[in-house]
Image 1 (cartoon, rainbow, N blue to C red):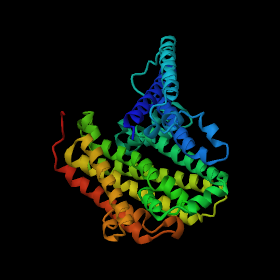
Image 2: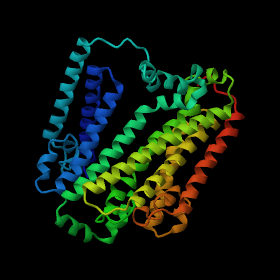
Image 3: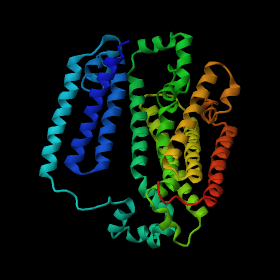
Image 4: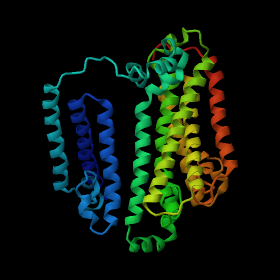
Length: 404
């Protein structure tokens, strides 16, 4: 294997996307647009480069996508494709030049801080009263609204991904040729076992298609981007920014801070779950798939709960340590280990391993085929509630960090 060739293609691809974000940022001054558009281009390219070659004549269309020039030539086996490298670096250089010109010609924004959702609502006479009620006096009476404003970008990114990708997967399902389904049916048992790492299931069926493509791995990642971000910033993030002292100087209890920030986490996770339901429903309709609405609702509800487990764990770690990095990587590391444990348990046919993992209670009952298993709902809910509750005494008994 030519690892150096793959690494070289990865470097060129990274420069392409990094400078694409730079040129958008330089031209607009909008961080959200730079992130959103660049991530969107990456997601479209990743999916298109993987799925378009499955369609008749689709490989030529895949060449229009930047991701194709990262691994379309299979550099790991075939070595460096200097034409592909040159194309990526050429566009990266062009982006750099345009970024310099755009920044020099644009009036820079005068605001020292970004405008939050609450600020926008206050600026509109029709929504000013509602915004004032949500924000409260000095925004302290509505900590949940302040927290919601701080995490708009991660929520919108997760929702956009789940809506767009699910719709696209339905369209691709309809466009796949019959020969592809025959190939999927003829796959050896060992290949099917490999799919356990992506949630398991028969990729030749509608339920297996959605489970392996998104619900097995990417959907939990999307919801946990939101929940772990909120959980790690809720307490440890406030301390890292040295704003916790100001917050506690108001007549509010530490437990109330945890409860209100937890409310935002539950609400945002539920929004991601709802959008996932709508995207999967729309994708099933677009692909002519027979997926009962109740089964789609079941897997999206379980998705919400497993995301809350990760977010609540981040909250508890942050409450106990006051360190944002520990909260993020502790929660991410734990959930990653639990995912691998569940997958390895399925491959090894060892249910005892799987039942130690929250991911077993997320996908173990095969909700897209069998509907809701309420005992699994209960287990995930209890785990999340335990982490939320544990965070309260951990935070109450600890001295607030005043410096790193």
